[in-house]
Image 1 (cartoon, rainbow, N blue to C red):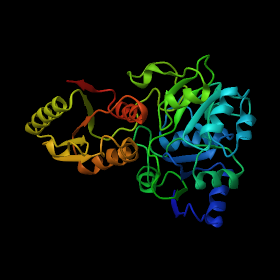
Image 2 (image 1 turned 135 degrees about the vertical axis):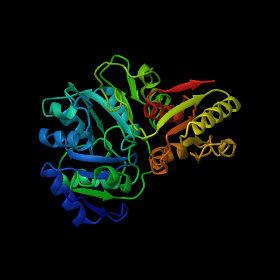
Image 3 (image 1 turned 180 degrees about the vertical axis):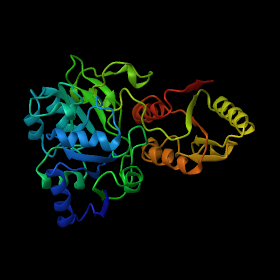
Image 4 (image 1 turned 60 degrees about the vertical axis):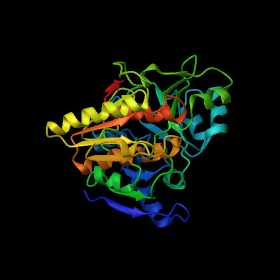
Length: 350
């Protein structure tokens, strides 16, 4: 299959290109497109065959649910068995934006889209290309991240092409995304709303809007459970570079000392080493490849660069990577969640 890559200006969208992409969606085909979080791999959410094509293209486990992207709140009402009061409050506060809500689905949503679940994950993206594609196609669009399963999510069209060239018919290249990590996911089917995946919208922000406690799923900071995942990314290793990644947490000086000790041991064993550092510490490591992810105080910039850096390590042919850890609150919680997944929960505490 030839993959067509179309550059598209988010500020001046070419109607011909959008029409071509929309026709593919209506025909049950796949189109990768930018959102404000990461690039999505889109298909008609209400077409079982189209959803199956997403799983096939990604090599994704079929029990890993897809997120349905919508363009107006009424679309949620059309696919939900019922719309909780909390959903309207959250939509008013955060949609369009990087928040996914899980509600009970109605019969219009095929189980191929929901990973066999009776619930459906829904969000309204805050990106003109994404919203334009939904409107032009007349479809609700199921869209996980546009990478092969387990790889770092794509934040540029070139990342999509690296994974999906020859697997899908079209990529809409809208440039680099703004946020760089996937949406926050909140489950509204529980008695107490529960965050299943942290993101740019924090648990504290959700609690303020809802005026009630919002719980955090323990699997966010613990090893994966064996239970059936309700949301993307809960059960399987994700975001991983090809090299083995280990997180090191503790006091800064001890973290640097331990990483350097392990780097020296790995190099003596003939391995090429990499370190994910911050601007404050990048000059203190002895690895073959030391990459700064940004200033520690600027969590937004760290989130924006995380997946790009993980992908770039693949081009350096390092054998092992060590990373500093980050705060387990605010956006730092989302950064740590992604790093833990990428590392397969390999963490050293010093």
